[in-house]
Image (cartoon, rainbow, N blue to C red):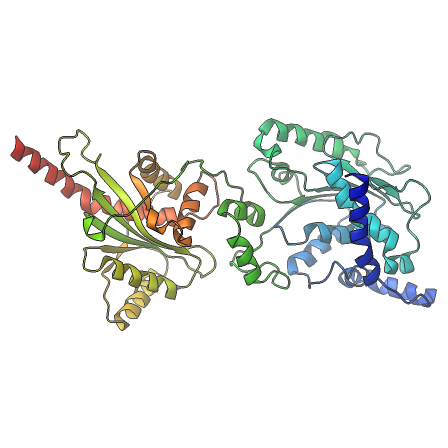
Length: 505
């Protein structure tokens, strides 16, 4: 950072900090000492009192449990794979300052992807030690007359802090006779570095051989990695192989609800997610890096034909168990012979195309899924369409609920169970759909291109890949529909062509 940027950033942080840490200057020392002892016995209260500017939302359980681990284990190696907006940097700062001000740790090295970024991350530490009136009142003046710069400083009590960029030499790093006893890696990976396996390997060698090696063998040391898993191979992923504890917390938990509802409401999360691509959301908020296009390079759009022009229609549903976990998917897929006059081709299926005419794909309720079927029923009108639902746990209950709801509206859908014994999902989708897509036989309905459901389907196709934990309920439903189309239609198609050719000859 330039000097001007440093000054501006300092001013932005200083004023609100001073305002929120105002004190009663007439308090006697014994009152301060008593408060200090009481708060140190309750770290969460300590955080709230001395750092009210940062603790503006009640902590979640994962915050409290994380702090307990760090404060209770002087020799510890932890990886925090916390989503954006879960305060991993702030929470870590509170813990480190607690350890340092209570005399449990003596030397902190904060390492990031560059010295500028490390200095920016270290700035709040320095600022609080200088200007947090509550800290100064209870723990005394911290700013020393010695070295006190933005990249390195030592408090009056002898606690040292140093910012370090990845690749810089940390050799000989000491605070008098004390080696670093807290080594914090924050935001170490970058998107550009993760594109090159050699760069990641080189950076990790530096982490192990240079940075971590600054620690003492005999002194208890805290090693902490904070960040997201932004690539399949990154420093955060490599650190997981050596950690005593891996704390993975996404923006939503395994039940699909906010991990920190005291701060991030469902409305907040939905708003942000709608502003980003599926791949970006998975990487930044769910620790699920996606290489887009690893199987499906692109997905083509084409205007759908009139419903009556399709040779066969299948509506296929892949249900899910919860409203907010997996995606429910219902797709209407049609098969069409685009040139019925070409009957002499050696590959009799060369004229066939599969069109995804309508798609519903959302994390929603069973009631919504029922409404999807009613919309498709209205769309196909009197045309022949077979309806299938993947056989899953609780399917009979789902089918019964769907039947009852549709019958109550005076409608009827002949829903069948797909009892096919399915092989590995990745293999099924990749072998069935990728060749069709690559050869120009699989299309999304261009008239639905701006429909969020169809857009989600396209994003799930692009995110689909080996080893990925990205949602694939949409492509799975399409595979089910096309399998049923082939099972019901292709044999008759071959038979029809055979008799046409025979009559010609």
